[in-house]
Image (cartoon, rainbow, N blue to C red; front, side, top):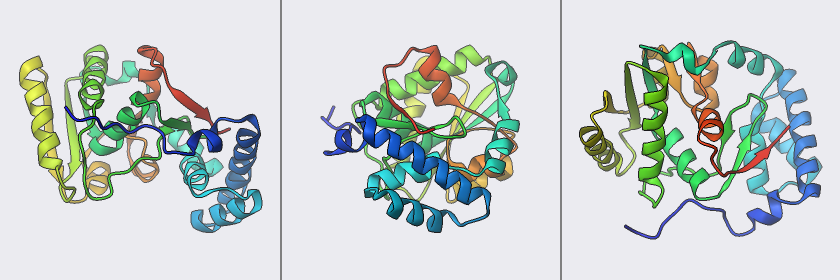
Length: 237
């Protein structure tokens, strides 16, 4: 196993751990919500707010992930399922979104809870997925959730164009055969669109998916509570 993880960037402690920075970010999220609720574009809003509070690039990234309009928050909440709603259902899981978020969380990177109750991280795939030390534990956490949910089936959806998507598919399929789970793994060219068009219930924290899906489940929020995970969680509101 390699020595990689998805931990903090150098400088993240300075940007996200002090009370002064947190107060600034919470005010920024409030201002961002005000602008988004009045139909300002996300890019324009984050530039205005970022300049006003003199935010650094990664703070703006966290701000964008944590923010939503009042209408988006209401809509997302109305479509959110509880664990008891998943019994005997088929769940579709937004593969890289959830896997990388869990890997980041387990690597003690900062995780940001947004106004919609979803947690997000600052990592990304950037065209290539690389397995890290926390990959298998992340898959095990999904398995623990799956068994407790009494769901019928879970289908992982990964981005086919991302390098190594075939490799992570095989890692999960090996795990499935060892643990006798009713899981499938599929590679799609446009996973976000595939998910909103084909899935009744989606596990994701991707904002576009949450705005366009039928129903969704907040897996990472559930796991933090249920598994009592140690997490560098930054509440952004």
